[in-house]
Amino acid sequence: MHNNLFISQILLTITTALITGAPLLADLNRTHATNPMWTGHARYHVVWQVVSYGLLGFLNLYLIWMADSDLKSRLSISCAILFAIIIAFYITAFSVKLFGGAFYDTNGYLPFGKIRIFGREIELDVNAVGFTLFAVVLVIATISICTAS
Image (cartoon, rainbow, N blue to C red; front, side, top):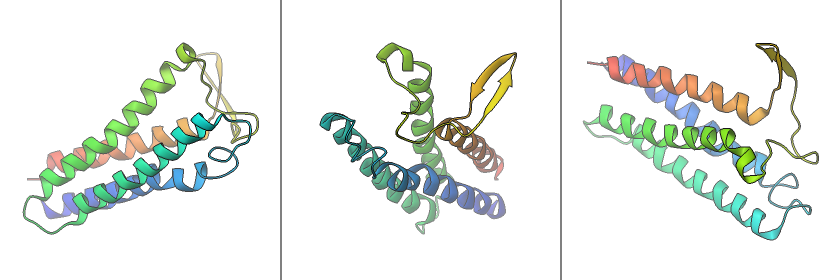
């Protein structure tokens, strides 16, 4: 049991650091929070999101590493928090046309490549690729928790 749960702790720590920590670096700069082309209200929301994610990250790390006997339950809650963030990303991504959103701005982080899927050319956005990888790692961590006895 402890080996699977330790693997889950490591995977969840990495995923937490990337999902909740990366926005601190990627969004609190001229591409987002201080972008002069963004409205003040949009900048307010991005800073709020980044700070919220940072605080959720600290909460998640506490759940992952605090000492008590109910590790499996705490890791399950940690997974739920991270899945909520990932699912929210995909809900937003799939509804982006409904509110006139975009995956990137020309003065921000641009797609880093293109691939063809079923004959359709898809741009590789750093957020979409990252969140897909985070989701895979999170599924592996969840399976590891569920299979721990």
